[in-house]
Image (tube, helix red, strand yellow):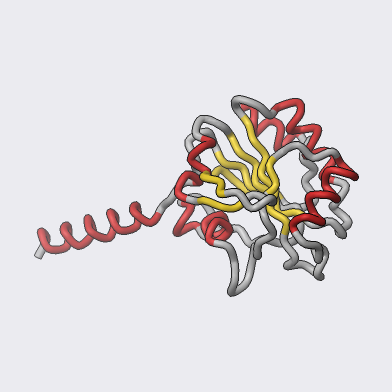
Length: 178
C-alpha cells in the first residue's frame, strides 16, 4: 500500500510539473500580423502589459517607452497587448492602435494584435499569466488596462503589478535589475 501511495504521489507531482509552462511555450501575432515566437526572447526579462487607447492609464505609454529606451535591448523587452475588455476602451483596429501609439507616444517596443485578456475568449498567454496551476507562482486576476506581468530571463513568471503601478516605479525598475 505504501508503494502504491508513493507511485500515485509521484504521478500527481509529475503531472502538476508538466502543466507549468514558460513564456517560451507561446506564440502571438504582432500588431502588423506577423507571427511572433516568444522563445525568441530567451535570455531577456520581459514586461507584458495589456493596453488601451482610451483609458485613464493610457499616458503610461510614455513611461513604458521611457523604460524601454533606458532598459530595453539585449536583456529586456516590453510587449504590449491591446485589449478591449474594460469599458470598451480599446475599440480601434490593429492599424488604428498602431497609428495611435506611434503618433501620440512614439512607441518602439513590440505591440501585438488586439486580444482578450479575460473572460471566455481569454488568450492562452493570459490564461498562463493568471493561473498559478499554469505559471507555477500565483493566481493573478487582470484588474484593468495596463496591468503588468514580469517574466524572468528564463521565461518564468515572476509577478504581476497592478494597473496603477507606473512603469518607471521603483517596484518595476528594481525587478528588472535583480
